[in-house]
Amino acid sequence: DQQVKQNSPSLSVQEGRISILNCDYTNSMFDYFLWYKKYPAEGPTFLISISSIKDKNEDGRFTVFLNKSAKHLSLHIVPSQPGDSAVYFCAASAGYGNKLVFGAGTILRVKS
Amino acid sequence: EPEVTQTPSHQVTQMGQEVILRCVPISNHLYFYWYRQILGQKVEFLVSFYNNEISEKSEIFDDQFSVERPDGSNFTLKIRSTKLEDSAMYFCASSELKAYSGNTIYFGEGSWLTVV
Image (cartoon, rainbow over all chains, first blue to last red; front, top):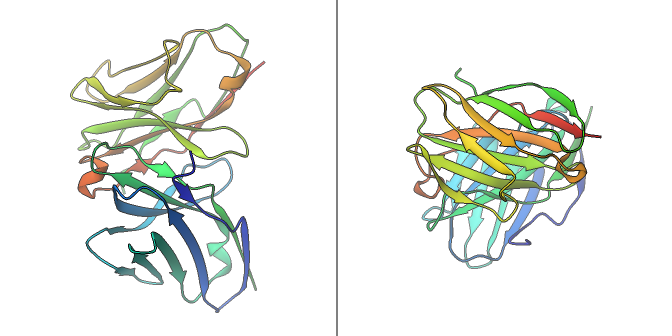
């Protein structure tokens, strides 16, 4: 199931700089997109979401951008902090059901 | 902050044995889910549950799996006869509304199941 893709397995960023995590999707029926942060052996923690009727949503240091024509979304973290180091999952859901489809995740390392 | 709680955090079981994983969803949530993550793989949807019945299930959720809400607070996942390939981290989750309506799914810490 490749409906949600995170093509970068890992990303390394210097503390204080911007982290940009990317996600692509193929299913045009997806209408709600979420980003989760996950540590090993823990559950996904909700970070931020965006509805398909918007192109940007901001919450503190986290901003999600949605480009529906390109079927692409991104998560920006500014400024990045060492505590942001984790695996970040993109997820999407469609109007015809209520399950989330997850990407494979991107490991973010923020170096101090 | 309200959270989804799961027990046990880790269980080791013999192949062929029955396992029950337990969850207490967030109290005002109406939709409940089980997901799993096999080591090194994606988080996968198993089943969703609303109004005391399954609302959607994946192809993974075969006859060996069942879910139940035995009382007003617990939500359980039963695997009748475990297989080696059932070894995974199982996540319980809950939400107030259906995900497609824009509401958010909140996950528990997970139950790590090892089948030997």
